[in-house]
Image 1 (cartoon, chains in turn green, yellow):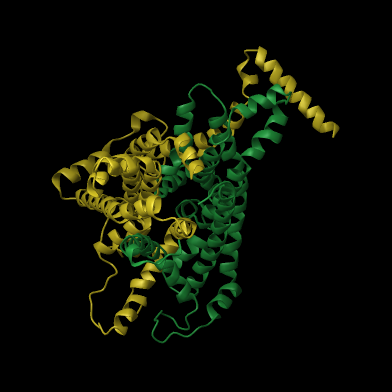
Image 2 (spheres, one colour):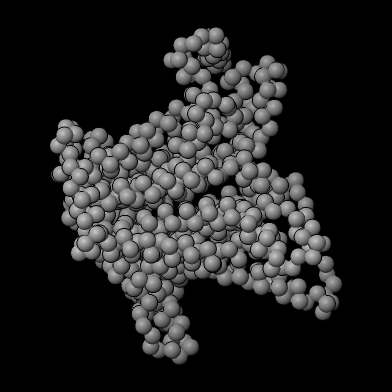
Length: 273
Length: 316
């Protein structure tokens, strides 16, 4: 491992090239986000890295602005219920699909996971027409129901992957040992898939927090962070936009890293490199 | 404590009762139906309903639904199709643009992500979690935030401009607001949707397969052509379908980075709904997108084996 002989240098170079390429792709994916963070601390109206001067001014402006505060509040009002409801709904779907045999099981999977593969523009448009036809209207509650359509299937997907890794014989054993239906789910099934549920819930929150298309069609007069950013981008840019965008980026990073560490620790305990 | 027991006994009695009875109403409170009910109800109300609304609206003559199907019209479809055939309207141009952008996006994402997926699945062992994180994080950041970041990067007097100035290149054509920037944007946004399916399919290849091929005298090129590529095909197909469909609906990319230089189906649909307030015409265009999406979505889901993905995650 530590031997650094010249004989190894050619394969090592090749391995380095693979690492380098993936790093380039990762950099490509992160560039706009880094740009936003740099811009958010820039002391001036438009970003230039030549005469860069650091400032927290735009964050202060953002925190003081009532329209930004209310946009954050609306986003939270949508994201928190969506997280709770989609976790319950998605876990239900995953348990039904992975732990049970029933007629039309594959058709159920098709319907339940199909929204994941829809362009959000199409979902948003349809929901907007539907909200008009059914008198559901526009605002926070329609936005919650709308986001649930896209996020519950994603939670179901994440939980299903975990649930499929659980041996079905465990359930039968629990039944043989006298567990009734409630005990079976409360003490056996749910604890076994808890990791998947937690990951699914965090993903649900991050996706709800960042959703643009669906809320832009359903939120009506209420503005959320993403619709606020979009409005400022297309009409009347202010330097607070990078600061606000960076704020929602920081929160997403934090949560995704939590999930990753969580998954890594779980898989790290049992395996060796 | 006692209420819990009471509930439990009620539930068990109901479950026991339904097991011996054929009353379908009672069967509904029993798993798995109980677990399925919320997601099915939600999707019937807020997914199937809205998609049907698009179809029904495409047959209306105004922005309200006429309950009498005899008053429905195919005029919007006729307008779009004759426009495409005669080549006078925008529809032919829009369709060609959209198909071209989507196909080019599929190709570009495939070329960029295949080597990366291969490296991640087979070559990268150290810091793998860090690399995966860097690739995943952008997926969980709002599309318009990321596209806006690119606009800041590419805009005149932006990051790229000052970088060019630093190395002494003062003059270059503006990189924002042209059709290649739109393609750049869609490639950027949908890259992970190509990368991860290919990565997952490459994970399935057993190391033993490589050793065996090498022992039998296969060179790197033969191994790639005969083993790696065929075995990654499911990932390539799923990724391509996914990227194609999603980029058909790309709107923010065209708006922010394209600045109206390229009209795509998505921006045209949006225009019909927003500015010109012609819902039926917008719906008729959306029906085309809807049909393609459903076909591709069902194809992806049919070939997606959740059990296989789960076992892969375990073997890692």
